[in-house]
Image (cartoon, rainbow, N blue to C red; front, side, top):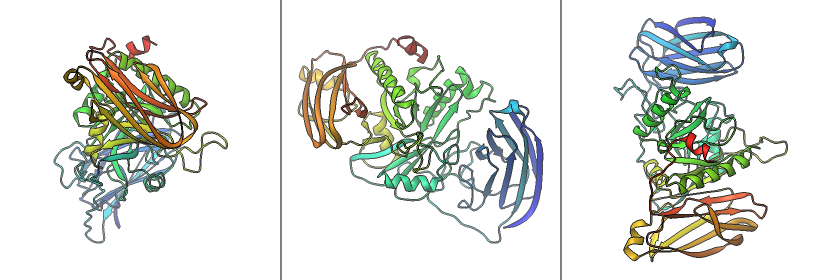
Length: 490
């Protein structure tokens, strides 16, 4: 690469939002930002080109950072948009969560030309400027219909992962390697407030996503392919106000993402927005990183809330997420278990392995979550095949009730574990299971009964090992509309 232009900007981050203009004097092939803050903190970095296109979204955490955008998409930094560097006024924005300390910063912008023409057709580059007329950052190369496997089966994966693009320690390459070691078929890249624009090309299916991370709660937008403006500088206050957060949740769903409420009871990251409509969420993360010391308690509290939601008539399905941040060799506790991608794992019964098929199955509740146990769950209702998450109402009316036969083949279950059946929030039956085997159990719903049924597997000491989504029958109008109303019922 040949350098032709260098600009330097120095200053003090004395407000939560800083905007600076870079005058690019000619058309170039690449642009590099080198940034240093002289106090530790989180700083969101954005770069907008003269056409109003968001080209850089980056999170600076404590250490100097270099960000490159280029005509060469392979060389372009993760979470940035490749393409030409046009002449004109570029705008750098800095969002600071630690602005009261007024850290001094230095930023250098270097531009230049490539020594030869570059043509990159990497199928895992998801966003470039070349085929997009929109001023919004959209993943114009991501193919949600790409089929990795056309078999209907249970696919193992993780809906909540982090890399060093935000506050994780693994690079995307390391994340992919760990996913393969854990036997994952898929995972979702959900770095904090960053929509990924490319990923590592390999055998595991990677779905773009984002963890919208405010001071009052976090949620994941799974399968999001368009940048949603979450910034607190928005007119409605963005992710830091009730109105702004409701707008962001709505826009993520309108963009086709599956919206999932993250670790809702894990302090200090629990959901605190009182006016959030419960109907804003497609799923809820019941189980989050079991190796973090406060999470077992938060998971049990989430299960209680989940029971309350189903009893009130909400049909909100549950998923899990590792929320992985550490290297596979690290743990949160001295000599404790490692915190790794795929722990717990979320298994999805999908018609095939593609983003569209998998997320469609998730929205239908065809999911169980496990930490160790591997299950094959087969359900028959009045002799016809059914799945987790199924609504039995129509079948029950046709047959004057529903006769349900569960067959759960299991392996890798610790000795003396117990499978519990939970109906309408109460344990109605239990069976001892160990290691490998098959459990068969039948239930009946009367024709007009409004009810739901799910299972949990726990160790002999009561530790959660797995749970499945409910099957259900009948409906009623929920009386609990908002998150605040739900918390009042505890």
